[in-house]
Length: 193
Image (cartoon, rainbow, N blue to C red; front, side):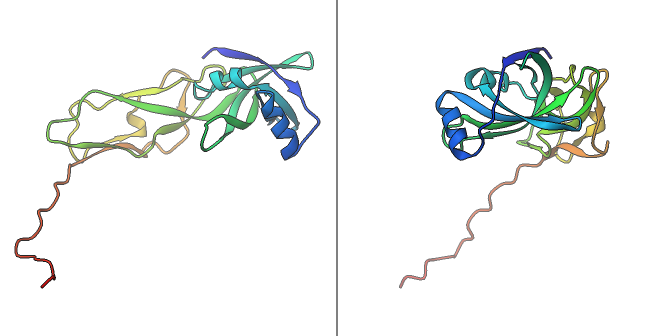
C-alpha cells in the first residue's frame, strides 16, 4: 500500500463552533494520537482526505510543523445524510510496526447450483500486519460450495507477513440453503360475513 501525503495544520480552537468553521472551509477536524504521546489536533484538507479514505486502512503521511508522521485512520465520522467526513481519528504508526486492522473480504466464484445463499458473517477479517504493508482486501473462492459449507478464518489465504488477529476457527462465510415460501393454507377464508 502506498502512502498518501496530506498537508495538515495544527489547530488550537476546539468545540462545535470551531469545527463548523473548519468544515465551511472544506476542511476536516481530526486528532492524531498513539505511542503514548499527547494528542495532536489537526485540520486536514477535506477533498484530499476523502479521496485517501476511499481505500480502507489507508496509510497517511501527514506533514505539519515541519515534520512528517505516518498514521492510519482509526475512526471516521460521516454526515449521515450527505456522507461528507465530519471528523477523523488517526493512529500514529512507525515503519515496521505491527498494527491490528480489519481487511475487507471479497469472494469470487459461483456457489453450487440450487439457489443457495452466501452469508458474510464477517465482512472484514481482523489481522495483524506491518503498518506500511497492509493489504487492501482479501479474496476467497466460494466456487462450488454447497448449503451448510463454511469458510473459516484459517481457510483464507493471507499475504506474507500478515497473521490472524482472531481465532482461526471463526466462521467468516457460510452457505445457507434457500428457503421457499410456504403457500397459503387452503380453506382459510376471511372472517367477513
